[in-house]
Amino acid sequence: MKRKSEQKASFDKLGGTPVLKELMTKAELHRQAEEQVLSALPGSLAEGTRFVSCQEGELVLSAGNAGKASQIRFRQHEIMEKVRENELFKFVWKLKVKVVPPRFQDAPRFVKAPLSKENARLLKEEAGHTKDKKLREVLEKLASHVRD
Image (tube, rainbow, N blue to C red; front, side, top):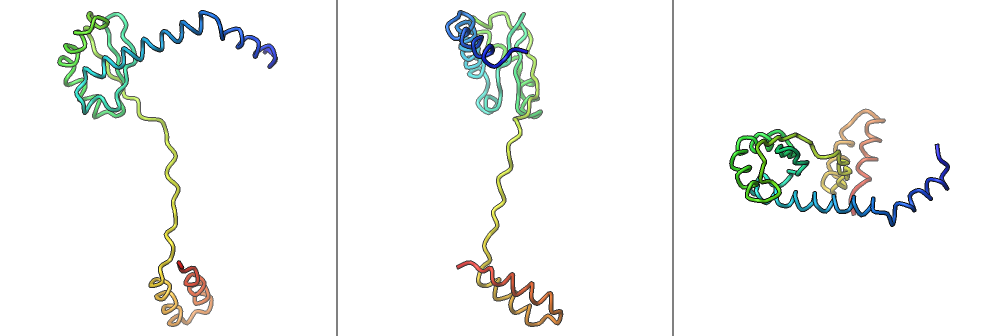
Protein backbone atom coordinates (compact mmCIF):
# COMPACT_ATOMS: atom_id res chain seq x y z
CA MET A 1 0.00 0.00 0.00
CA LYS A 2 1.24 3.47 -0.82
CA ARG A 3 2.12 5.93 1.88
CA LYS A 4 -0.05 9.01 2.35
CA SER A 5 2.53 11.32 0.79
CA GLU A 6 2.71 9.10 -2.32
CA GLN A 7 -1.10 8.91 -2.53
CA LYS A 8 -1.40 12.67 -2.29
CA ALA A 9 1.14 13.11 -5.03
CA SER A 10 -0.78 10.76 -7.32
CA PHE A 11 -4.05 12.64 -6.66
CA ASP A 12 -2.33 15.92 -7.39
CA LYS A 13 -1.26 14.54 -10.76
CA LEU A 14 -4.93 13.91 -11.67
CA GLY A 15 -5.86 17.57 -11.21
CA GLY A 16 -4.62 18.84 -14.56
CA THR A 17 -4.79 15.68 -16.65
CA PRO A 18 -7.27 14.81 -19.36
CA VAL A 19 -8.61 12.01 -17.12
CA LEU A 20 -10.43 14.46 -14.88
CA LYS A 21 -11.65 16.48 -17.85
CA GLU A 22 -12.93 13.30 -19.47
CA LEU A 23 -14.80 12.33 -16.30
CA MET A 24 -16.32 15.80 -16.04
CA THR A 25 -17.39 15.62 -19.68
CA LYS A 26 -19.03 12.22 -19.15
CA ALA A 27 -20.80 13.49 -16.03
CA GLU A 28 -22.14 16.50 -17.90
CA LEU A 29 -23.32 14.31 -20.80
CA HIS A 30 -25.06 12.00 -18.33
CA ARG A 31 -26.75 14.97 -16.64
CA GLN A 32 -28.02 16.28 -19.99
CA ALA A 33 -29.28 12.82 -20.99
CA GLU A 34 -31.07 12.46 -17.65
CA GLU A 35 -32.69 15.86 -18.11
CA GLN A 36 -33.96 14.89 -21.56
CA VAL A 37 -35.28 11.50 -20.46
CA LEU A 38 -37.04 12.92 -17.40
CA SER A 39 -38.68 15.59 -19.54
CA ALA A 40 -40.23 12.76 -21.59
CA LEU A 41 -41.78 11.19 -18.50
CA PRO A 42 -45.21 12.29 -17.26
CA GLY A 43 -44.91 14.79 -14.38
CA SER A 44 -46.03 12.44 -11.63
CA LEU A 45 -43.52 9.78 -12.68
CA ALA A 46 -40.52 12.08 -13.18
CA GLU A 47 -40.16 12.82 -9.48
CA GLY A 48 -38.05 10.14 -7.82
CA THR A 49 -37.00 8.60 -11.14
CA ARG A 50 -33.38 8.65 -12.34
CA PHE A 51 -31.71 7.95 -15.66
CA VAL A 52 -29.16 5.13 -15.24
CA SER A 53 -27.86 4.35 -18.73
CA CYS A 54 -28.64 3.83 -22.38
CA GLN A 55 -26.53 1.20 -24.10
CA GLU A 56 -27.23 -0.82 -27.24
CA GLY A 57 -30.81 0.45 -27.47
CA GLU A 58 -31.67 -0.42 -23.86
CA LEU A 59 -32.76 2.53 -21.73
CA VAL A 60 -32.37 1.86 -18.00
CA LEU A 61 -34.20 3.96 -15.42
CA SER A 62 -34.41 3.64 -11.65
CA ALA A 63 -37.56 4.36 -9.65
CA GLY A 64 -37.86 5.06 -5.94
CA ASN A 65 -40.55 2.45 -5.31
CA ALA A 66 -42.19 -0.54 -6.99
CA GLY A 67 -45.45 1.28 -7.65
CA LYS A 68 -43.76 3.98 -9.66
CA ALA A 69 -41.67 1.37 -11.51
CA SER A 70 -44.86 -0.48 -12.48
CA GLN A 71 -46.45 2.73 -13.76
CA ILE A 72 -43.37 3.44 -15.89
CA ARG A 73 -43.44 -0.10 -17.30
CA PHE A 74 -47.16 0.24 -18.03
CA ARG A 75 -46.55 3.45 -20.01
CA GLN A 76 -43.23 2.36 -21.55
CA HIS A 77 -44.37 2.58 -25.19
CA GLU A 78 -45.59 6.14 -24.71
CA ILE A 79 -42.36 7.08 -22.88
CA MET A 80 -40.07 5.46 -25.47
CA GLU A 81 -41.94 7.26 -28.27
CA LYS A 82 -41.24 10.62 -26.62
CA VAL A 83 -37.64 9.70 -25.83
CA ARG A 84 -36.96 8.64 -29.44
CA GLU A 85 -37.73 12.20 -30.58
CA ASN A 86 -34.31 13.10 -29.20
CA GLU A 87 -31.29 12.34 -31.39
CA LEU A 88 -29.37 10.66 -28.52
CA PHE A 89 -32.13 8.11 -27.98
CA LYS A 90 -33.15 7.57 -31.58
CA PHE A 91 -32.56 3.79 -31.45
CA VAL A 92 -34.08 2.98 -28.04
CA TRP A 93 -36.12 -0.19 -28.37
CA LYS A 94 -36.25 -1.48 -24.80
CA LEU A 95 -37.02 0.15 -21.45
CA LYS A 96 -35.82 -1.43 -18.24
CA VAL A 97 -36.85 -0.08 -14.82
CA LYS A 98 -35.06 -0.93 -11.61
CA VAL A 99 -36.36 -0.24 -8.12
CA VAL A 100 -33.81 1.65 -6.05
CA PRO A 101 -35.26 2.84 -2.74
CA PRO A 102 -33.95 6.14 -1.40
CA ARG A 103 -31.00 5.94 0.94
CA PHE A 104 -31.58 5.59 4.65
CA GLN A 105 -32.35 8.84 6.40
CA ASP A 106 -32.09 9.41 10.12
CA ALA A 107 -35.45 9.53 11.82
CA PRO A 108 -36.24 12.93 13.29
CA ARG A 109 -35.37 13.15 16.94
CA PHE A 110 -38.28 12.73 19.29
CA VAL A 111 -38.92 15.92 21.22
CA LYS A 112 -40.72 15.50 24.51
CA ALA A 113 -43.70 17.75 24.88
CA PRO A 114 -43.48 19.73 28.12
CA LEU A 115 -45.96 18.87 30.85
CA SER A 116 -48.92 21.23 30.92
CA LYS A 117 -50.16 22.82 34.13
CA GLU A 118 -53.43 20.92 33.83
CA ASN A 119 -51.65 17.56 33.59
CA ALA A 120 -49.39 18.49 36.50
CA ARG A 121 -52.48 19.34 38.59
CA LEU A 122 -54.05 15.97 37.69
CA LEU A 123 -50.84 14.12 38.65
CA LYS A 124 -50.76 15.88 42.04
CA GLU A 125 -54.42 15.07 42.56
CA GLU A 126 -53.80 11.41 41.73
CA ALA A 127 -50.78 11.38 44.07
CA GLY A 128 -53.05 12.62 46.86
CA HIS A 129 -55.40 9.66 46.34
CA THR A 130 -52.62 7.05 46.19
CA LYS A 131 -51.86 5.01 49.31
CA ASP A 132 -48.49 3.68 48.06
CA LYS A 133 -45.79 6.03 49.38
CA LYS A 134 -43.24 5.38 46.60
CA LEU A 135 -45.81 5.79 43.84
CA ARG A 136 -46.99 9.03 45.44
CA GLU A 137 -43.42 10.38 45.48
CA VAL A 138 -42.93 9.47 41.81
CA LEU A 139 -46.22 11.13 40.78
CA GLU A 140 -45.34 14.29 42.73
CA LYS A 141 -41.90 14.38 41.13
CA LEU A 142 -43.48 14.04 37.67
CA ALA A 143 -45.90 16.84 38.51
CA SER A 144 -42.98 19.11 39.39
CA HIS A 145 -41.78 19.00 35.75
CA VAL A 146 -44.47 21.41 34.68
CA ARG A 147 -43.98 23.83 31.77
CA ASP A 148 -43.60 27.48 32.74
